[in-house]
Image 1: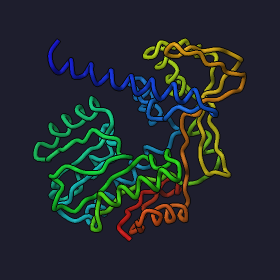
Image 2: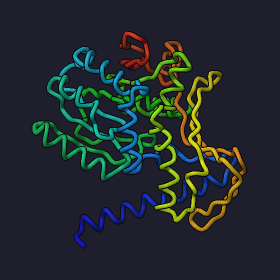
Image 3: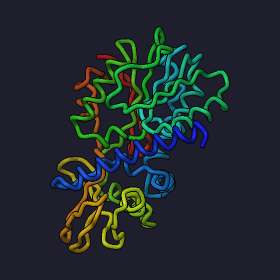
Length: 321
């Protein structure tokens, strides 16, 4: 076994241990919950890519369209020679729209928790942008306290697309923005993608597509537990359950037990009653007042907002208040 393969095996062992700890803790509490980040194993990421192409799932294509239109304005606001810092970079697909628009970019810092994914993305960017200084950071952006020294001296432009801010609780969202505000500095700015409140039926359909790809995506979490943790979930015994909670202004997503059953996970037994749910994700939706309040909670101010013609999604440019 070569050194790189050994390193990957060690990383996978750490990831599996973290997954096991989170699952056992999440299934032991009531109500039961497992963090959404564990939905994105290799198969989960493939399914999510399919979700982004579904006719009901407007978020990705709408935000991409907005960014294609407003990227030159973002570049003008940021000015030349800035450092682009992306939180939760994934494949850096949307960031390429900014990379193409920003003038004399000093450095690009993609931040992601998956080392393997991050290394692949960085390699692809270095191939496609040979003059770009790419400095990947493998970290949880919710706990990030410092950036590579290469960003020092440059104006910092943060990028947090995909309405990922909506996957955080209000307290978590404020905590993230405060941390970002500190890292980006008084002269920095943050480009934030936000899904907007709209017809509840439109929201419901986006998370309950007719092809049931989103259901497959949710149930894949159980398949991952079976594969990695030696669990014995019967996928036919659970259902994807997603709905819009208008009072809280959020989509809530669960795995719902269809019958009384006992499941073994990593050697531990868990009993489920019929109708009992495992929370996996929520997605908060915002209006203009909510965005402004969220920004203000972290000492940001809205300098500019771009939306699509149907007002489904917004991209905001936040600056230090």
